[in-house]
Image: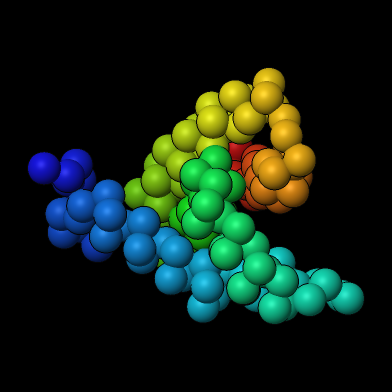
Amino acid sequence: MPDVFPGPEGEPQSDRMLEMKLFHHYLTETYITLCQGRLDAHHFQVVVPRIAVSHAFLLDSLLAMSALHLAYLNTHDNRSWLEIALKYQNRACSAFTRVLAEMTPENCAPAFLCSIFIMLCATAYPC
């Protein structure tokens, strides 16, 4: 049975549904906030998510970023989104630590991307 918790709208949500919501939000909204200047939107909307679905640590950091974006957009109910962002950020950091201990050519690009998302989340999270 999946974990169920109260979602930001007050209704129970499973982790799977929450992750789908966060991933969809990243693909349709959050990626745009990362495209500044000469950075390519296609890279953030297509390439990074394609890599993330094969590397859980990167996916967790992407989901944390998406939850932070939702917290920013929903100022009236941002506490739930901030808690969700912190949950995924903690999972990403924990897994990322293990990846760093066993760096390979296959996981160095996802690790680099994850480090960027972790830094952005740490900077964006309100103190």
